[in-house]
Image (cartoon, rainbow, N blue to C red; front, side, top):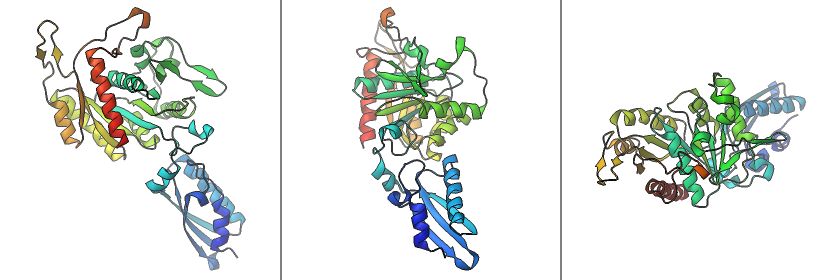
Length: 352
């Protein structure tokens, strides 16, 4: 007759599909109920992430093992492991496991750059924040996950393509940042006409099949708005810090609030707001002109109960034909210095 000890022994050696640790190691067997008269076994299991394909695979294995041991019927409930348990295992991944950026024990910090609408400079912010973090000595990756409107390779002046080595994709490194984008896999700037499920597979490959190496930060340039791709990414990654980009215009800030609300609804933490195109400063007079109005970023930060991380004025990087990166500001450029200050602010806030 099956008893609790037998069930624990049978299930204890099974692995959490995300932590790659046994259920015995993670204390993932939360409860066991046995009804001998009906040969029914109910178990409650805690794993790193629920409602996933990996959970379904584990569920099938549990049913198979318990029925093989004599149970006529099996009931299973899943819940997520407490945060303190995940923190205990974070950063303990093996070299192979560390390649899976979606593993909860990978200690890379995800920073998602979001906006409520297009045209506010979200990708420019993503690129320059990534470069700013690299200038601070951080190991940085950048995923251009705006699948329909990819622009990062062009903005960074990337001319080469990723290398395929075996079943791994080697990202392109530029300005100290490892970069991957849909733009690398589309010929002649062709439009992407795929539907959601296909795009989800591409994004999964960007996370799992790219040889990122050791990273401190992964910057995600999200699609604008709150559509399927942005939602998929929020649900796909274990946790992220989110930065919302807006312009000073009240309408842009109003729309951007939706992106911040989506982050909160999917249990991601808001890191702050960056206001782009805050003003134009005349080189002749030094006078500031508030072309798109003022105050939008501050009001948005207050509405989302977060911090205004910085204000970026209108301006153009100084282009260098020998090292062409049309959207990257040099470290000594006035706007480049602002991005470096924002990058340091981000590092300080993440540490807290």
